[in-house]
Length: 254
Image 1 (tube, rainbow, N blue to C red):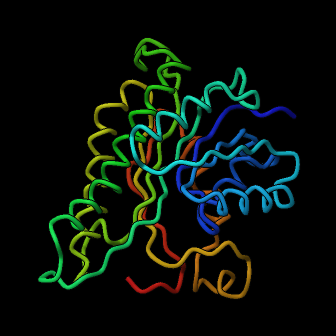
Image 2: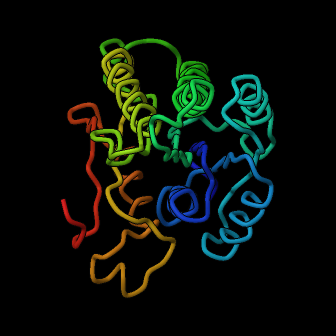
């Protein structure tokens, strides 16, 4: 069965990114062609090899990029012209890059602090603009009121508990995570009536690309479970859209 649309994932790591790509691409689940984006060629090669076995028959292509706007523009240009995605319309985009910074505040530097924000928050802004351009390019710019409620697609940001509260020595991390959460809220308010569903998730707990004892007993989340949740979010129709979703394994303290 040919893919029913296109998904783009920035942050193709060995856990969350792999699970989301597997579920979105699997013919029995999302059945979407998936473009996975990451900085490291090794990560991209690893995820493609993994999905060859765990998502047989799927269409997955990889593109190397960081969150620099110029590099993201090049990656999206390559996606637009890739033969594997010919005639496919964008349905889902996921921003799920790793972002960590821990440092005593009095040893923090202005350069490091603002660099962290530029990479993570600036990256979210640049990625969102490229995604929105593609949504409008593929689906037109008419609002829901003029399309009988036709949804253009879903943009998902993977956040953490740091977007709600920051621990000691996590100033830059907390500022970045909170910044992307606020960006998602603003985009949701601006883009919902235009047919674009924007979601911010809060991953509270460890995510592993595994289905072992820790997952079965609720100690850790499985990456596939996150992927299934993201697929469900992308399938929501305009009568009910989730803006923010808290995700945690059953035994995580909160």
